[in-house]
Image: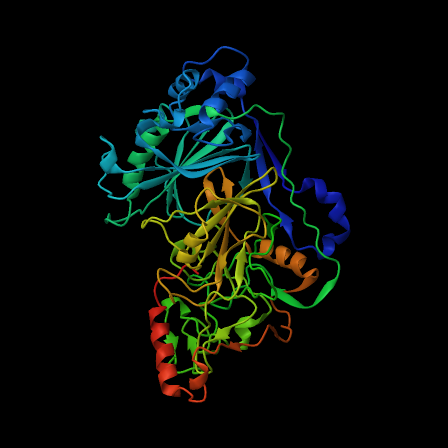
Length: 560
C-alpha cells in the first residue's frame, strides 16, 4: 500500500509563524506497507510456525554474513541461499563458510546497511570466476540492491530515459522497469508491497576494457535478480512518515549571506540552461567541514578556475594575471587565494556546466553537487598561486555507514556516508580527499561513523595529487522508486551552516543588490624552506612557472 506524505508534516504548526520568511521546504515521500505473509510464503523450504518466528529463524541464519539484518522493516532480498544457511545453522556449522550459501557467484561486499527505513547492500561478480555470465568485462562488477518503507517523490527528470526491460525478467518480475539514468542501469520492481531497485553503473556507448556496457549490465542484472531470495527482516508495526525539523535560528547573522538556490554564476550552466531552484532540506545534517567560516562557491568559474575546459580569454601565465571564461564576462585573476574565493555570499553550483548526467538539472547534465571552500588558503610562499591541501578537517554529516571501495575500478577520492533512519534515506558523497590518508585512517566500506567524526581533510585530489583546486565536493542522493538520485544539496547545506554558526543567513534573490563581500581568514604563508634559507627570496619567475605547471595538470576531467 502506498501513501504520499510531506516529510516534516508534524512540524507544520511549529513553523507557521515563520512561514513568510521560510524559504526551506520538506521533501515529499511515499510510504509502503510490507505484506509479511506473502514474504513468508516465498521462503524456500519454509519453516513451520508464525510469520514472526519464521523471520526470526531467517535472521539468525543470515546474521553472521549480514549483521543487523533483523533491523530491516522490509523483507530483505539478497542473492543468498537461505535454505542452505538454515541447514547449516541447524547443524551447528558456520554458515558464512558453507559452500553455496551465496548464490550465483555474487560475493557480498563489507557494505550492508539495514535500518529503520529499509536496507542497502552491494555485491561483486567477476566473469572469470563464474561460468555462463556472458560478458568480457575483466574487472569485478558491483551491484547495488535496496528496498525501503518510504521513497522520495521528485519531479520527473529532465533527460530522455530508456525503459526497455530484458524479456528474461518480465515473467518472474511482473511490472519491472529497466531505467537508464545518471550512468546507471536500474531495475525497479515491487514485491510484497515494497519497492526494490537493483542498480549497476554502466556506460551506454562503445565498449572498452575500462567501462562496463549497459548491455553487459543487463546480463549481470538478470543473473542477480533471478538469484534473489527472502533472507530476513522483521515484521513491525506501521511506520510513521519521516519528519525533518526545519527550525532555523531566530538571530540574524551579521556576515553570512547566500544567493537563492538555483542562482548560478551567469552563463555557467549547461549550454543556455540555468540552475534548479530546489529549496528542499533533505536531512538535518552537521555541516561537512569542521570549522567556520566556510564558503560554498564554484571552483571552476571562480579565480584560478579552469572554466571547465570551455575556454579562457587571457593568459594564466603568472600569479594575479587577469582572465575570464569564454562562457561569461566575470573578471577573474590567476590566484586561488583571491579574497572572493573565500568570501560570502554563497553561490549554488549544483547544475553548473559538467558532462555528467543529473536528471534534476534543467539541461539534464550538471555538476551533481556543491563546491565548498574552507576558511582560508595556505600558500607555500608569497609567489604561490594555489592553496596547500589538507589544512582543514572534513567530518561525517550524520551517523551512518561508509561506502567506499579501494580497488582500481572505483574513484579513489570518493567516499559516501549512507544514512538510514526513520526520518532520512539519504547518502552523501565527499570528493577530492587524499585516498592514501583515508586508507590509513580505515575509511572503508562497512565502517560506521558518528556525526561530527573526522573522516578526512579538504584536498585537491582528482585522479592524482593537485588534480583540482582546494575544495570539498559535496553531493546528496535520495532513494526513490528509480533508485538513488542526485538532488541539490544547497539548501540542506544552508540549513546546516546556520545551525553551526547559530544565526540565520541573509538570502540574496535575483535582482537584489549584492552586499559587500565579507572575506574569511586572509591567506596564510607557509614557510617551506629551512630557516637558514629564508633570507634568500625565491625568484618570482620560477614560482610563477611552477604555478603554471600545476595549473595545466589540473585541467583533467573534474567532477568537483
